[in-house]
Length: 405
Image (tube, rainbow, N blue to C red; front, top):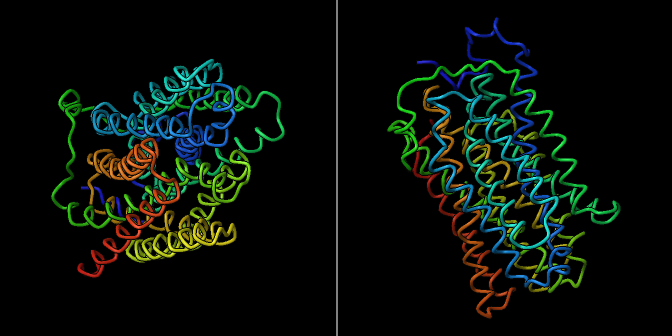
């Protein structure tokens, strides 16, 4: 089999037939994840504008967020492995086109139905694309692909949150302009995918691959158990800031939800990118340890901030938890892909992202349900935080119980 844990690129017999250089292909694939995840976080600072215009409750924001997360989960379960069978290019053509339709739905939204439709399309296309992109990146260059798989989603979330916040504050018609900008980027990416020659040969089993599965090859299972705790904890923190963040900022700190909420999500994501880059030469287990510790300490600081009404501790917690999120995500990805065969990459990554989006979606849905039924948002956030801390501790216990690979 081809070893995907090596530091160099994987030999590709089709390179001579490619219209694009390996470097261009690598950046094109990474940019697709970047733009898809940017599109997912752009609405966060814009939600208060929709809320004011359409008079829906803060709980509805959590519902909209949950719809996106559930759509990603559904797509990962059904389409997460299909690019291992039909190739990466067909999946990316369809999903990029779906993202363009989502941008149109969100950019021209006249009510809650249009917003939900756009978020469902975003979720389905993102879930179908992330494992195909991730596998393609690793096939182009194993080490850089693993780093890009961790950095691109985190960076995309940061860019989207910042883009939304800036446009809300300074650009006319932000609910239209921001989605038009993203649509322009997607058009360029679609043209790039059209020019790609697929490097993943098609093989029988595509229809069977659509049957939902939550399993990985035997040689990956032990590493996936450890990685899944880090994935769930880290992405639960991301869900925490995306769903409850704006409401907490307005309720606890009495600050503008749009501007500060977007900055909080950007700070969280930005610190994750910084941690990945600063530790890029470290081992996967070191990443996983640092991620678990960062998530634990970050949530401690956030809980203290809610008790003291301290914005300083809140943003300190964001920075630590964001660094933990980035490091843990990178460590988990590297733990599992090092043990996967090339023809199994998309399937293994789909299970990894399933863990991530379960962590992001399920706690956010539960928190939204509690708030909808009259629970205090601060108490709900405190319970949320304790659960995340418990998951981080579980990840550390798993690392203690396993020997160095």
